[in-house]
Structure formats: C-alpha cells, structure tokens
Length: 179
Image (cartoon, rainbow, N blue to C red; front, side, top):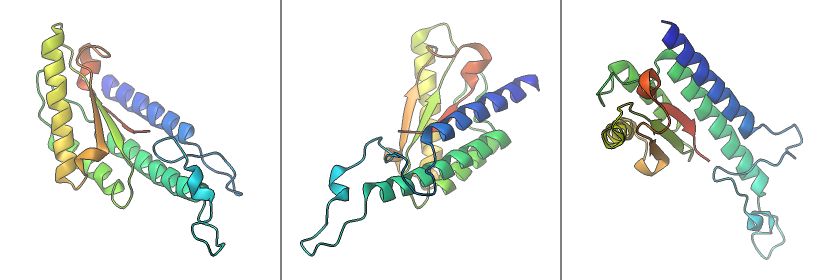
C-alpha cells in the first residue's frame, strides 16, 4: 500500500513538474511558449501571401500545442493515479486496469499531435536480460496505445533495462509528454 502511494505521489510530482515546464501563457499571449518540438518557426510570423494579410503567428500554434500538451499531461496524471502502469516481476503483460489507463491517455491524444515518452525498466542484475524485458514492456504499451488509435510514431520509448531503476522501482513505467 505504501509503495502504491509513493508511486502515485512521485508520478504526480513528475507530471506537475512537466506542466510547470510547459508553462502557460498570460492573458496577452506574450509568453514564449514554443511548439511540441521545442522550436518556433520564424516563417510563421511573415505574411502568407502577397495580399498583405498577415499569417497566423507561431505563438498561436504554440499556444494550441501547449494547451494540447497540458490536456494530455492532465490525462496521463489522472490515468496513472487511478491505475499506475506497473508490471509484475519478469513480465511484460499489461493488466486490464493498465490497458484501461492507456485507453484514457489515448483518448486525450485524439485530435492533436502531442507525442509521449514511455520509459520502461526491468531490475535484473543481468543488463542484457533487463534490457530485453524493458523493451518488451515498451512494446506492450506501444501496442496497447496503437490498439486505442494512437499512431506508433507518436509514442517514443526509452527501454532502460536496469540502468535507471532497480528493485520495485523497475516495475514502474513513466509516461510523459515528449518535447
């Protein structure tokens, strides 16, 4: 029970940090928010045609991308609070609760181009065995998201094996909005 509470609290802290890092624009829209890939197009601020009508600014696109990223981040946070994506020892099998949580994430990703990062781990002392299981876990999550309508190219994976987490922490999965 304590482990689940600790996972939830750490997951909330990670997502809150991501939301803060994404930032939100003030009422005048002057904050320097950039698009999902972290860059703004300088061409977007130039007129789009010879008739002198200004093109929509890069800030408009960035604001829309930022709002979508915040929506997806909130959905990830809520889904992981209800059912953290965790695996049992020596397994890459997703539980029905985990699949449902991934379905909620997929719903939030509909109608936008936000990409997510999925970090999986495995805690074997043997680095090769850990890496292989971590990759299977990442594949299981990607497959579940694809089945829920998310294009494979919108899901980045980081299968770390035993490099970043060992023991019980290696059973947890982190999902964040990718930059």
